[in-house]
Amino acid sequence: MAKFIVLKNGMDYKVFNFEGNIARVGSGSTVDFQLETAGIEGDLFFIARTPSGYEIERRVRDLMFTINGVAAGDRTLLNEGDKVGFLDYIMIVKYEQQEQPSPVSTPPPVPEPVAPKPIDQGTAPAVPIVESKPEPTPTPEPPRPAPKGTARETMIIDSQSLAAQAQQARSTPPPESRDRSAAAPARPEPPAARPEQPKASKKQKITPVYTLCVLTGQHKGRAFEIDTQEFVIGRERALRDLVIDHDEHGQPEMAVSREHCAITSTDEGLYLTDKRSQLRTYINRKIIEPGQREFIAPEDIISIPAPTGEVFARLCFRGQENFAPMSFSGPINPRLIAIMAVVIVILTIALYLLLR
Image 1: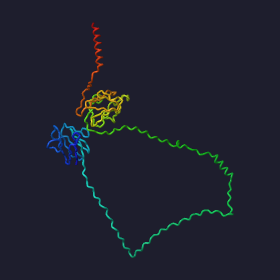
Image 2 (image 1 turned 180 degrees about the vertical axis):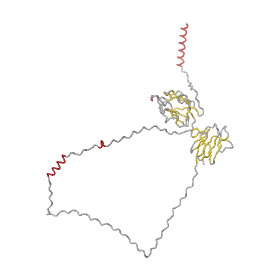
Image 3 (image 1 turned 45 degrees about the horizontal axis):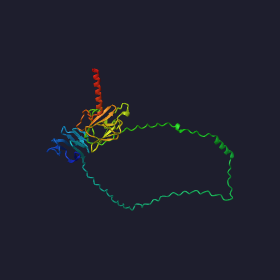
Image 4 (image 1 turned 90 degrees about the horizontal axis):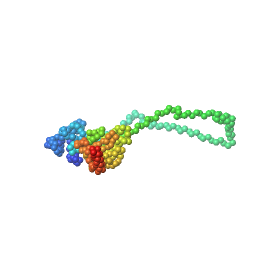
């Protein structure tokens, strides 16, 4: 049995309980799960039960739907907790396993008491066996002092032999002390551990609403979906969502930083933060200070002055990608107008003097 929780525009909408083999989802009188689909009548997709789980099959060719933020094909297997996005709906898949009754434990059988066998008259009575303990060993008596008046043994000390032994001990050279460290073979030192490479952090996936359309550089003409909570731009290939200027041409101090800037998705919208980069980040030709957080909206132009060429990208809604050339309009500088007027006057006087 499966449960499909449907959200519309992020709010609770419906819950479908599915126990059969196939269900039709769409609008009209012939479908099993009714949805409000403006301009689309009939079946949107089927939900079919397979031995591996539940499978979704698209029935409208132009209908685009995603699974966990990734575009799906015509037939895709659904796993527990998958989020299916289509139109303005999000459908969450929940598998419910049927509880199996727990086996009733039976108590172990009680052993029956064994009755003693009757003793025959010809059987001899049992005689208890008495273990013999070993006899304790007698402790030796301490030496008793000699009684008074008894003659003691006299000890004779040979002074010449003692002097000869002392002279021999002085003349004997001490034994050689061998250097164990020199005799022992040198142990090979273990190889130095390699520095750990930065691992790609697991980022929180979101349903893509915006795309970043690259207008110049190595990714010109490509659209990158902002499908993570923090979309990072930089040159580190293992950690970034959009990699630019990976080859700094031998000038690392002039290269794009590993984490140059990041686009953060919030409930209020999108914010761009400069990650204290070396080359700075610009929004519509306005410089963003290091660590500064700036609000961005669709049609804003983000630019990074990379050594291989300045990279421009336009923020767009998903499905409304725009790769048109950039146009920055602003107030005319009065100094520029005055300089142009002076140049025109000088050229006019010079032409008059030449033709005179």
